[in-house]
Structure formats: structure tokens, C-alpha cells
Length: 294
Image 1 (tube, one colour):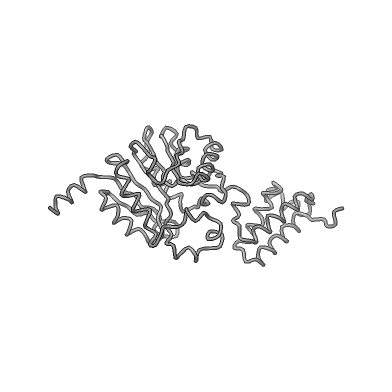
Image 2 (cartoon, one colour):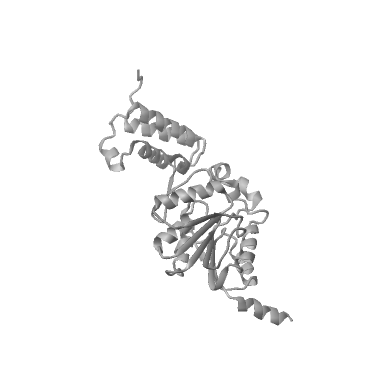
């Protein structure tokens, strides 16, 4: 027999209290999103019917999710969803949660993509970058690669959910299984220096896949490898775009210049921090540099 009767308001307030006591950031917002996820009620409906009773199954589910959020399990892992570029992406513990900062990479890439081009997304993860671009440019041929089979399963599910047919997803350690040439390569590789990972927010440090975070000692390991190998796959005049850490713009720019990229630009995020580097592959830059040194 049910001993307690919980209304929408009472359950919500209890959820807020528990999350605040656990030190969860944005406790009120997260408690609301979990209530909305469990009950399907809108904010407007809640405000008009705060005393509506929740059924027992909903209440149990809500309290279970609140308890898991108290453990700092990310909200998106609990709901299984994160919006990116206006699209609902499925996410779980095998992929990075798409973040608003990464939308800048999509926006920059969209300035150069044209129908008929070939696009490669290295370290595709959930597929949020690749699939968002293919939604914007359905006549572009898109390939995404990742070393994680579990991440590729998530990307495949997102391609199905977002109705992006024909996208090719490849299990590959960077370029190891990639063939052909491309007009654009995009990547959000692991770029956090190893020693900095322990300083990250618990939700990231404990629950994001380490393989998607760790950029080795200086955070530049994967930029070096991708930039060096990209020239074998990028057509002359093609574009390479990266998401970067806030203090990596100068270093990544230098690596791209050495590899023969020109017209390199660093784009800032809404907080005014370096977030994206974009450059055009120009083999002549390397050839001219070599002649100068002779």
C-alpha cells in the first residue's frame, strides 16, 4: 500500500533539496529536467497543476534518477539525450556529451562546405559534428571514424534517429582504415593534458570516456598526428578544422603552418576563448619553405 502521496510540486522540491545537498551544480534546473523526463509534463502544465499527484511508478523512477544525479552522473546520461545544433542526440557513457562550444566548429565548417564535397570527421564520437553538417548539406558525402566501437554504435543510432541515410562510419585509429581524398576534415580530438584531467568537474572526470579526453602530456598529441597525416587525404585547397582548448590556438596554428596549411584562422567561443582553428591545405607553402632552406 502506498504510504506517501507525492504531488508534482512536492516531488520537484524534494529533488531540488537532495541535489543541492549533494552540491550538484544547477540543482533546480536538473531536478526540473528529470521531472519533465519522467512525467512528460511541460513547465506551463506544472505551474497550472502543481498539486497533481504523481503515480507511484513515476515517483519511484524520479527519485531513482535524483539519487543517480546525486552521484554526479551527468544529466544527459540519465535522460539519454542532448540537443546539439537544434537536434536531439542520443548519448551515453561511451561518448562525450555534445557541448555548445562545439557548435562553433559546425558553423565554421558550414561556411566552406558545398554540395558534392567529401567530408571526413576524425574522432566522430556521437557523430554530432558530422551528422549536423550532413543535415545542413545532405548532398555532401560524409564519413566518420573512431577507435571506439561503442562510440560508433552511438553514432549509428544517431544517424538513424536523425534520418541521415548513407553516412559511412568506420572503426579506425585516426586514419589507419581511411582511404580516398576529402575536401574537408573536421575533428574534435582528445585535447586535455593528462595532468589536467583530475581538475575537471566530477561529471566529466568520472563519467566521460577517458579515451575521448586525454590528449597526452601537453594536450597536443592528436593534433600532431592528425595534422601530419591529413595531408595524405586532403585535396589541395581542402580545409582542416579542429576544436581546440582555450590556450591551444597558437600551438595548433604553428603545427598547421609547418604542414603546409595557409589562411589559418582561430575562432573564439561566446566566452571570448579560442575554440576552433581552420586552415586550407596548400602544398606549395611546404615546397616554397623547402626551397628557401636549401
